[in-house]
Length: 102
Image 1: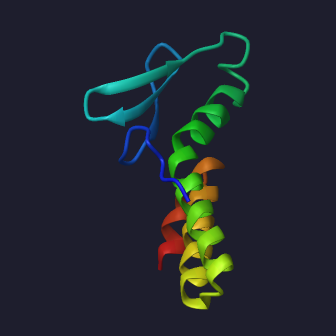
Image 2: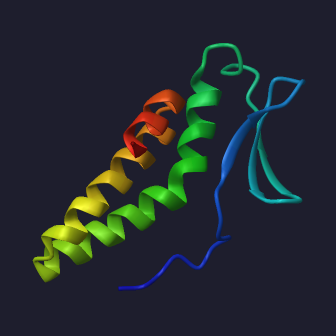
């Protein structure tokens, strides 16, 4: 199975002072998203969180697919935890993401 060829590392959604979101991809590389219609409704933040979680969701999905194909229960358990953490990040549930790691 192929690996993700995009920018590696943790992507993070950050609210800018002007009500648009930056997705931090590398220390000095950001992707900005802005939509005046959605900036106050929470839709923009939800979209930013999903975009920021995309690499982790992909990696967890790849790991889970490999674990299922190989019949590896230990890897499946690890992939399930990775998936829960990535889903919580995508949903903007920071506290649950931290609690899931314990």
